Image (cartoon, rainbow, N blue to C red):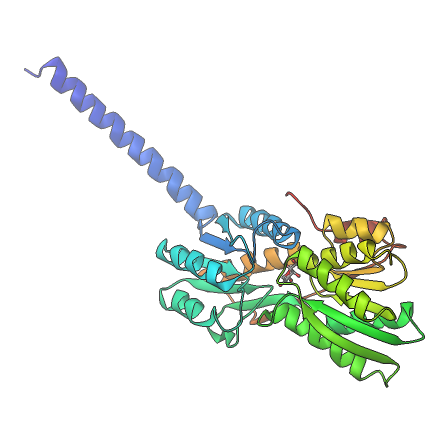
Length: 327
Ligand code: T6T
């Protein structure tokens, strides 16, 4: 005769088998409607409105497609900090990563290693020297963006004069292309404008502010500054204010974070070139999921930008183009 204990053990076994079957049904059902791809988004740097907005797009699209996504990023825009993060992500064996590499050279081999380890790589925003291992490269037309910045200078300072650039640091595909686009456009403009130099902020607003005040002391007749990313533009605006030159020197900034929108409204900055980071995030997840499901992918996707001026900043288009600080 079975003891109560044995019987209840058996009963328990039946219950757990049913429980397991039920759990398996749920897993299968989830798998059928969504494959549950495991994606990691590695930002260019944490706490940057551009990548925060991109993360919002990444999360929204991942939710829509049933993928899981985790976001990580270095504390500074610096390949020596981003590489170990990438290495540990590869060790965690996700299905795919979306990454904004911090340097065209330094991140090349680490990303090739990701692909070799079986992780699909989608390059969002920045790229590397030879991106052929990547599923897709998704970014703004950065060279064109630099040229657009110079067109804005031509409109705002039609008489010509001295102009300069404040970038981040050499080796970043995006800002290098913007800086080049601006400089080339100045050179092609027939001598009315003089490019007095390209400086680098190291992505630190305080350094961009120092560069600006020093440049104004050296060239009191400076007419315009092109600051090719969010933190450079933020610092350029601070420098202009510190020098008491608000409205006297034209500042064109790339990106549209809250501080930059504020500077535009208070007249320190005259135009912002807002990218579409949310869309880059959406497209990044779409490409990763397509690849993982054997569907066609696009090697290159170029997203657009919106030029925001004081006249358009409060319009629906201007508001939609502004970056987010939370999702
Ligand atoms: O301008 C963006 C991004 O496109 C660039 O690659 C790095 O700087 C930003 O993140 C803005 O801070």
